[in-house]
Image: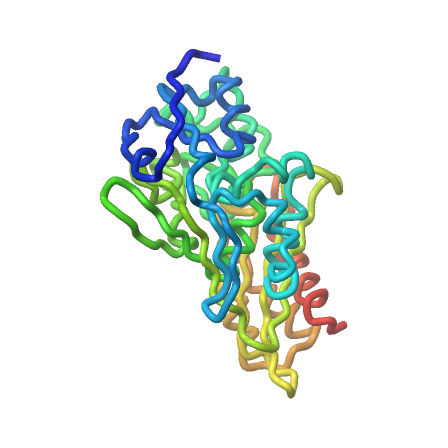
Length: 326
C-alpha cells in the first residue's frame, strides 16, 4: 500500500472543496480499503466523511429518503422500508455479509467498484484501472461477466444489489459539490463503458452523494428482489431481478417496474418487459411471455452464454413470487 495524505471533513462544504482527481472519500471503507491495499486504487488523499450530517431514514407522502451515510443494515431493518419498499430491504439483506452490512454506507454501496478479477489483479491489463491497456476478460475467463451494456473496451458487471432495486424503484440521488446541489435519476447516474470504462458515473470532482430519494409506491403494489448466485452466503449475483408490480382489483397489471443485476455493466432497467406486462391480466403465462423479451440484444461471451436464459427464468420466477400467482 502506498502512502497518502489523510484528512477529516467537518462540514459538507469542506469535503467538497477537495476536488483533486486523486482524492477519495472514506465512509464505511469496505471497498476502498481493500482496493487501496491491493494498489488497485492509489489515492493522493483520503478524506473521512463519517462525521457529516448525511444520515437519517424518513418516509412520508413524498416517499422514502435515505441519508448517504446510513449503514446498509439500518436501512434493511427499518420497519417502513421492510413494509413499503420490500425490494430495497431484500436487496440489502442479500448483499455481502452481516458484518460488512453493518459497516458499509448506502452511498458507498452505490459507488462500489466492479468485482471483475482482472480489475483487481494489478498484474493484468484493465481499461477501468488503466485506460487503453485492454480488457482480457473478453477473451479470458468470463463466466461472471456482463452480457448487456458491454463494449469492446469492458465487459465487467456492476456489483451492487441495492442499486438494482433502487433503479427499479425509480430512485434519485442528490449530489453536492463545489458548484452546488443537483439531483440525478439513478438509472441515468451510471454510465455504460463505451470507449471510456474508467468513467463509471456522473459524479464530478469533489461531489458527494448526500441523499437517496425513492418515490412512494402506488397502493396495490407488491415488490421483491430475487438473487441467483453460486452459493447462498456472501456471493455476488450471476443474475438478479428487482420488481415492483401494481395490480387492480380485477387482477390487471396497471404498473410494472423491473431491473436486473449480475448481467450488465450497469443496473439494467427492463423496460421491454414492463411494457408487455401493463394492461394485461396477471398470470404465469403473461410473466413468461414478458420475460422472453428480455436480453434479446445480449452479447454473450465464451463462458457466460447461460446468462440470457437465466435472466428470463429469473424474471418469471420473481414475478410469480411477488404476486403469489402460480
